[in-house]
Length: 102
Image (cartoon, rainbow, N blue to C red; front, top):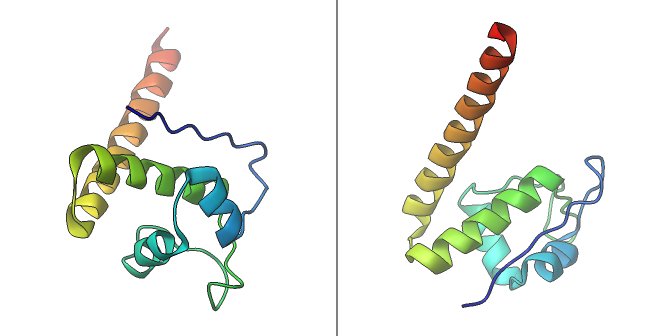
């Protein structure tokens, strides 16, 4: 089993389509398909001008992993990503509340 890893160096950094493909081991067609379906929302008018944030880079990485491991179609993938992000948000909120109580 192949393990995908992602390293985000700076929160203010942005990544081109080529960099996203290189960092995530994706084909440009995959990224374009994910963007067309709303899984990532880069800045820029055309794919040649796209700029992805670190959060979008992570979301694409997560989407690729879910698609590969669970063989999800695009609607299932979008739903799974939204639910995982909600879980992450709730975990952060619980951690914040625990810190206030202690």
